[in-house]
Length: 170
Image 1 (cartoon, one colour):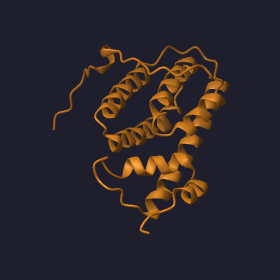
Image 2 (tube, rainbow, N blue to C red; image 1 turned 30 degrees about the vertical axis):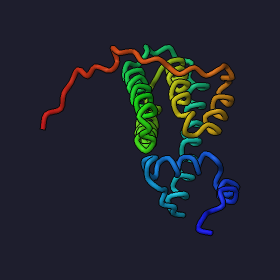
Image 3 (cartoon, rainbow, N blue to C red; image 1 turned 45 degrees about the vertical axis):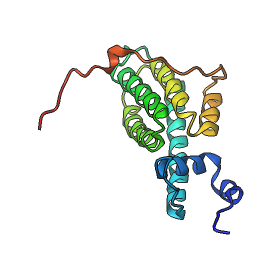
Image 4 (cartoon, rainbow, N blue to C red; image 1 turned 180 degrees about the vertical axis):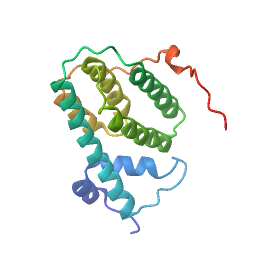
C-alpha cells in the first residue's frame, strides 16, 4: 500500500495541478518522486497562470489601440510553438514545463507595455493551444473566458521567426 490516492489529491489541488506536477517532476522513463511541496508549487503556478490570464483579458478588452504589430511577441510565440512541438515529439515533458515558466515570465513583463490588443489575442490563443496538452482544463476555461470556442488547431511554425539576428558572445 505504497501509493497515493489520486482522487484525494485531485479534489484538493485540481487535475491540472496534478498533471503539471507529474510531468514536471521527471522524464517519463523515471519514477515520480512524490512531494507535498512540489504539488503545492504546481498548484500555485496554475493560480499564477490564471491571474496572468485575467491581466491579459483586461488588457485585450481595455485597449482597442491600433499600435503596430509587435515583432517581439510574434517571434517569442513562434519559437515557443517550435520548442513545445519538438519537446512533445521527444517526450521531454519536463522541458515543456520549463517552457511554460519561461512564457509566464515573458508575458508578465510584456503585458505592461503598450501593445496591439489584436496581436496579443492572436498570440495568446496560440500559447493556450500549445499549453493544452499539459493543463487542458485551465486552457479551455481561458479560451472560453476570452470568447473563443472554436476548434483548436495546433499552430504552425513560421521559419522566419526562428532565426536570431543577434548572437551573445561571452
